Image 1 (cartoon, rainbow, N blue to C red):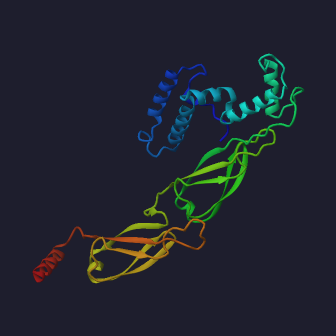
Image 2: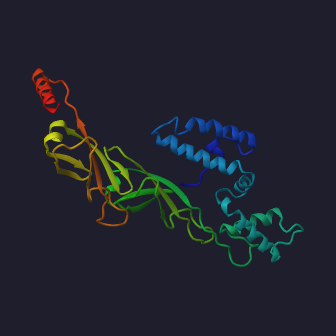
Image 3: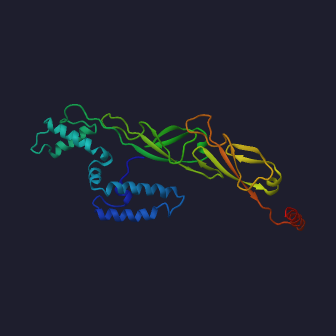
Length: 294
């Protein structure tokens, strides 16, 4: 979550041509593409970094700003505006407005250094926003809990509310890059990547699960016990229950985000299990039943 060297990400030098950057990007994008690396979180992260680097370096104007201002390239227009304001005040007296020494002094001024030539108040700039991905399991986000993240070698204790969804982004104010000249810090944006290794399928606050149902219980009715996300429940099965019958268990789904004590529903679909390895006696009884039903 610290400053990323886009040239290093693509494996090219700062003197690389547009063609060099394009070639390097295509090669790395093929190597780390998610379709070729299923369920590989490291490759997925690398693929995102490669695309981010390409978006900046393949755009001539953005690359120019990046080369000149580094991690503060997104504030380039603000820097230029401040530089013009300094020039209009007559702070620098060379024929072109800035000598090489003046230019260095200007940036000392902008970044909080001491400059004998800087006049007036210092210009404040907001720090860079950071983006991070936090990988959790579906079980993790079933309950509200705390996690410790390391951002620029600093530990941040955050509370993750129950019901967070896959791909959801939350903002942690003031935990991004440090502001310039006393400006406010940037923010930290955390995107959640939630893996599901359970038998339940999640759709927002609702859960879905398939349950095998014994043929004889489906025909005659009875009682079964099934797993919900947070425990077991007993269900009464009506006689002559059909295959793919769906029942709803109210309030047995997933927690609703930031709505304490509120849950979605659990939808159970019955799949009738046909017996196998029938004995001779069983086959005769089934044939007898078949004849009765004719």
